Picture 1 (cartoon, rainbow, N blue to C red):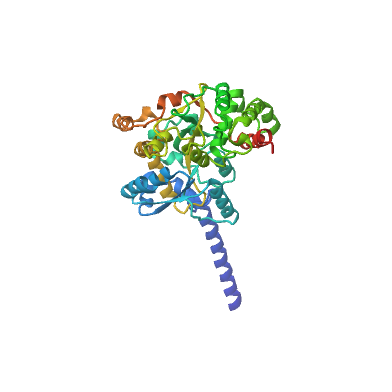
Picture 2: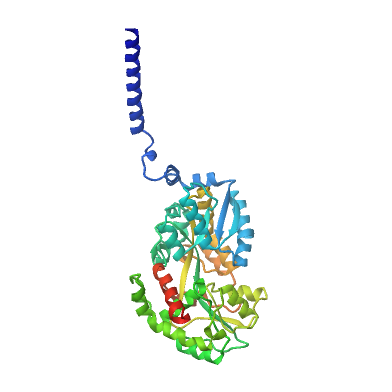
Length: 420
C-alpha cells in the first residue's frame, strides 16, 4: 500500500508539473512565440533612446570598399571622433571589397553563426540585391532611426528602391553618386555632349581614351550610360531579366561601343582593370579622359595636387546615371544597437554636411526638411575647382538600371564588345 500511495502521489506531481509547464508556455512573453528571433523582436520594441543607451561605450565595425583613401581618412578621423564624443562609440573601419564581405557573411550563415564581426556595411546595387535575397542583412531597421523622418525624403524612389529593388527598411541612404566625365582643359578643349561627339573625340585623341573593364563599378556604369544614350532607358525599368531580351535591346549600344575599340587605349584589346588604375593613368597624362561616380572628386584631387587645376568635369546633354549608396547591418552583427546609432548619425544633417565638406559627396538629405541654420551649414561648403553645381547635376540625373539586369549587361559586353 505504501508503494502504491507513493506511486500515486508521484503521478499527481508529474501531472501538475505538465499542466504548469503548458500553462507557462501559453502565457510566456509573446516575443517567445514570434517567428522572428528573440533578439530581433527585442530590438524592434526598443525606442531610439534605449538603443542609444545600449550603444554607449561599445565598438562598431564599419565594413566597406577601402579603395578611397579620402573616405577612409574621413571615417577614421572626423567621423570616428564625432561618434566617440557624442555617443562614446568606438568606430573601427575595416576596408574590404564587398564581394569578400558577402562571401564572409554567406559562409557564416551556412555555418549557423549568430554572432559575427561585421556591424555596418557600405552597400548598394547588385550587392544589396544579393545580400537581401540571401537573408544576409538585419532588418527592417530604417524607420527606427530619427534622422530618417527628420532629414530624408521618404517618398523619393532612391530612398525606397536601390537599382530598382525595394529597400523595405533594410538599408539607409549614405551618399548620392553620379557619373561625371573629366578632361584636362590644357590638353583637350572638347567636352563631348553625347555619343556622336564622344566618338569624334575618341578618334581625334586616339589611344588617349578608354574606360575600366567590366565588372568594375564605374566601367559598368559607363556602359549603362552609353546604353541610355543610344537606346533610352524607360524600357529597362521593368524589363524581364532574360539575357536574349536584354541583348536585343542593348545591341545598338554594343555596336557603338565596339566601334570605339580601334581608337581606344591599346586599341580596345584590353581595358584598365579598375577605376583606380584608370585614374592613375589619367593623372599621369597617359589618358586624356577619365570618369568618376564621385561628382566632386576632381575638387579633392586638385586640392591635393593629384590633378592640375585645369581639369574640368562635364556631363552628356541627355544626362548621366546617378544612384545612392547605402548602409546596411549584417544579419549577425554583434552590436546592432551601435550600428543603428552610427547609421543614424551618418544620415543626419551634421553627418551629411561633414561628408559633403570633406568628401564632396552629394548629400542625401532633403533640403526642404533642413532648418535655416542647417541650410546655411551646407551653403557655406565650397565644392572646389573643376566641378558642376549640385543643381546642374541633379537636373541631368538619370535612374539606375534594375539590379538584376546589370550582370546580364556585363556578360553581353564581354561577349559582344570584348569578344570573349
